[in-house]
Length: 87
Image (cartoon, rainbow, N blue to C red; front, side, top):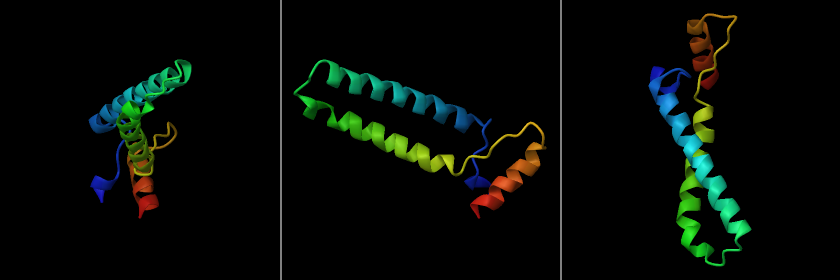
């Protein structure tokens, strides 16, 4: 069960947050470019939009498996609470 919980300070979480931030920036750039320049050749960008949407969907699912940090409690108890919430 320890593999199901993603700790917020772990290397995997930091890398994933960086990737999702890049995905948001690309999505914002593509969407505004298509709208601003009235691109009629939107068919060229459907693969990129599908990839960005898929990455964001995976991020929503991973949020349910991410532990939370509270300054008032011990991090071990928080990890155990988040693990019990998943089960």
